[in-house]
Length: 442
Image (cartoon, rainbow, N blue to C red; front, side, top):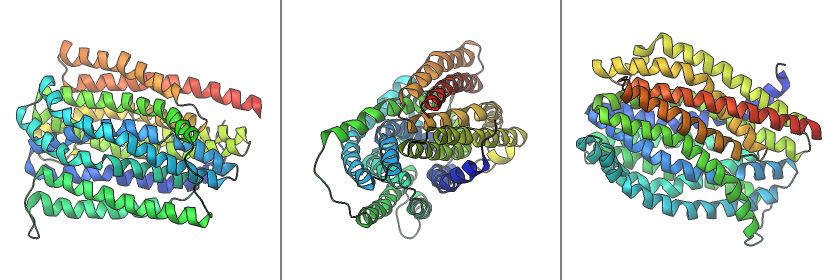
């Protein structure tokens, strides 16, 4: 049965600014690669490797902080904005508690690269990038906490303002600091890290101000520390954080393994990964919207509305990703040519985009299903689906095809494709069971 137009309109009204926000976040990496690309394949490889390493660690904290999603959405749906505010304060404390060990963990990235066998020149540049970028851990997690709080209450305009201004700052500082313009030193890849770090603080300042204004408008008063609220967010968010780590971690490990194949292979991987990250932000925005709509409907005692929200988001994501997969398969060299003119990188990147065009649909579907399940209070299904799908199916198969059969980077990406299909099928089954249980209660 097709979803109703009314639900599609409601979902898209919420999802549109969230999608633009997600696109703005991935645009940081795109702009960084566009500027750094002028320094050569080694610089592209280093920034790409360092960026995905940072994001792999950051994603664990982000998933934990996003435990506020279901609780805040349900509280808002039940007419309790005061509880939303209490949850935000406790989630910000959680963000700080999580950021400290993750910041320390990034110091070990260089030795890990060396053990895997990444080229020494790439390792040196990647370490210099991470030595600066790791300081973005807390402002990044605090931004996520404020973002989830605001969107759970249907407040999205400040998120767009933060992303737009943050991207402008990032692009301007990339231009100035990478190449040494406007009297500033030429820092190369370190300049890119400085630009992104500054942009993170800009974004946080905007959403923090918007959150304070929203709390004042609701007449919010902090009622003191409540351990249970802290634990509620943590225990719901922890499986989600580990799930995200399992998903992003396999992409990070594949990137590191491709680093053994040389700078050109790693550059092709990074450019391709950046391109599919852009398309993935649409279903990711739909995933956030699905989590909010499912949670709000459950808070209002409307399980049928929650089911309809999940089904609508899934349909929209699959249709979009099918179209994007077709575009990537038809004109791969055109889009790759925006980043590099190196023929070796273009040839290998084309093969990777062919694989990516296949798993786009499954990647988009699993993202929305994860959001819908999270909105219903279930973060464990996605955790186990990702662990089994990526680490028991996708990674072993990819390593066999890449190094056993000698297919190289396309073989590793073939394993990613198989893993995503397995994850998607499992989550589809779990959402069907969850929807049946909700339907029985309604």
